[in-house]
Amino acid sequence: MQHNIENVEARWPRINRTYKFDANERKSMPCDPLDPLAAYDISFRLSKEQARDLWKKMCEAYKAKADPSWPAAPINPFKDDGDGFFTGKAKLKGNYNGELTKKPNQWDAEGKLLPDDFMLTTGSMVNIAVTCVPYNMREAGVSLRLRAVQVLRLEEVEDANPFSTVPGYSGIDIASPPEVEHPFGNTLTQAAKEENTKAPDFDDEIPF
Image (tube, rainbow, N blue to C red; front, side):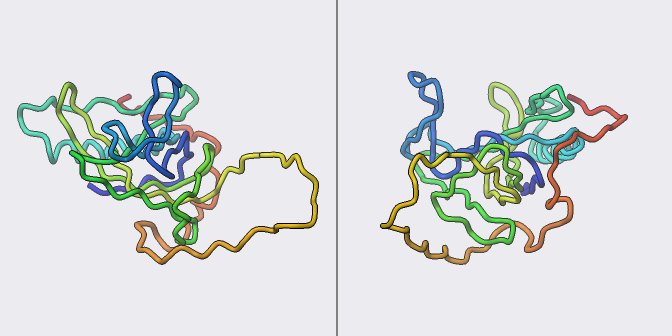
């Protein structure tokens, strides 16, 4: 089941290449896409209302795939941040059974394909295209398989230049990437243009 998660905050995106967790370094490190643990992934922060809507989509996908031997409902995949927001995660393995996957494309707000090495930053506002994939192994749930990301607002990372301006090399123009069909709309909605900085107040409860 295809689904777009709209206007959420990116957290710890690792999409420019495949990464895996390194126990010695105690953090995710770049790796070859053929490594068994290689993956592209992005966590995202969403409001209670957004979490509820996404949960419904995931439960619909689970119900459509589950057979009578599966548990009645999938596990809750969201982490409650305690401030009215939740954190979820979308992931795509670098390979499945040795067959390389297609790297998720990244697009700007106007639908232009971003460079292959584009580095998305934590705190940026994005749309995320995913496929809901139900499973029943040690536990039953629904994974969000990452397909593409659209950057609505890029969070700038300050990196002070320690040098003064001097005569010399001034850089080169980077050629525009080729046109590729993308899964997002060509125009931004008003909601996508506004920052999602405050959790809305809801009276009803969600099941997590």
